[in-house]
Image (cartoon, rainbow, N blue to C red; front, side, top):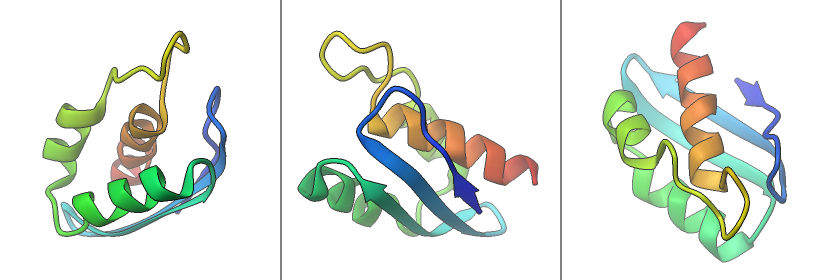
Length: 80
């Protein structure tokens, strides 16, 4: 599933689930080290747990962040 994030540097988040488990996450754009780290940390994690941990995280003065946008992407992927 492809998700277009809003309000962050990354341009796209690709999410693949296996039931309720995160199989893979790929960010297009954004801070490479941070987005790669997030992708590796959530691999194999339960979708609901990942959403709970990342939802609402802010980046500086921005009202959102790449982790927050990933939580939104995971919600959208879960609803598909």
